[in-house]
Image (cartoon, rainbow over all chains, first blue to last red; front, side):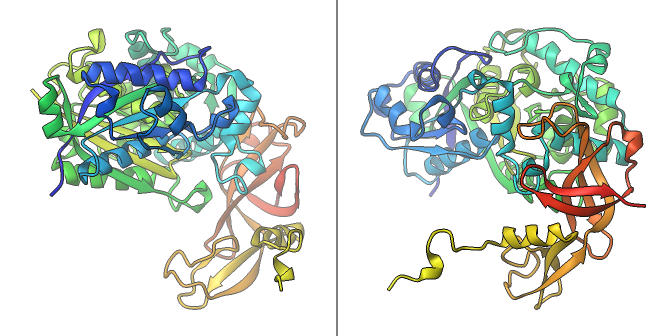
Length: 386
Length: 134
């Protein structure tokens, strides 16, 4: 006997360069999620925390510190790391524990604090998320790894660097509408194309920023959600996937197997197909990633996402809006929090809190988040509960 | 009595063997004795059949470029490397891909996809070293 799993509350800090400590960020998002759900911390049976670089802010083993400062020091917590995909991978574990009936109500919070280390150290820390012996250790930065993927994609499918720029421009347009986004500035195709090259063929505006931030959710059983009487949404699908850690180990560099497999699992569990999805929050750490994601998730045929993006299919008013929050590109990418923040966006969309970025008549949404170059991934599908 | 082979400083990992071969211009690989699959030395179980009975083979470090990037913003430790590429290449002899560091690459015209490269060594600072090969 399994439980239907619901999201009853959500909270998030602003994403950006923030002054608070990693613990304060996590606590602020957690407090907002608890208040949003209309529950007491005493209702929480367990805490799930996603984080990657806690040591950079002098705190590892952060779960007990967070639980203690929420006033529930005897409630068990667990910290989960899966690089940039930590948030969604952690969400899967929180989901699974409620689904299995171990807990009626849990806190799921993702947090990252990195910008204080500066660009050089941040770049180095991120490179440790690669298969370092083959990638970081041979001179590949993270932009470099995705640039290699981009070169393979552009060559195989005759797409252009300008096609990639359309992803950046669209996500910045959405980010302007999100008061918690890291970057709230309109950019043009020319600005993207003329921005400095970071790792060819990717330029500065093809890349997401380093961000600090935290996002939190309250997950619970349907019975518990109904007992509270607040708006909630149901998690109807959850999937995990994996890929060879180093991209040299992949037969086809223009697709990410972990995404494909996680999506298949999630669609099957939810009993829906890509055409049923009303909007999606996907992992656009670099513009090429969004192009590949939207193909791997089944929204576009292989090789067609670049032209469909250029035609406007993924805009807020398009056929399948992608990243209404602004995505990692504009909303920001505090890597431990990103996968959780995507779900916060879905919750805000489904509970009437998304303001001008609301996707009209949306009832089913998907989140997709991966670690490193897609070595790990999770996909979740949500249904609005009326 | 403690097993002296396990004491600190006396261990020798598979990565060290891979590096020793790279210094000679070779790529150290394993061939599964059960199914014949080739994979890099650093993989412990066969990716195809799951067995761990291997024949070690040193392959010529010569291959063709599958994809690459030219780093304009170098990561820590590579700031003094000049203009270089990080390259994924496929070995000419066997269906194995590896990746490495290729110096003196400034533009994509310097390295069309499909170009030939060869392993020339390994250093602690820049990893697996490559050069263009005619």
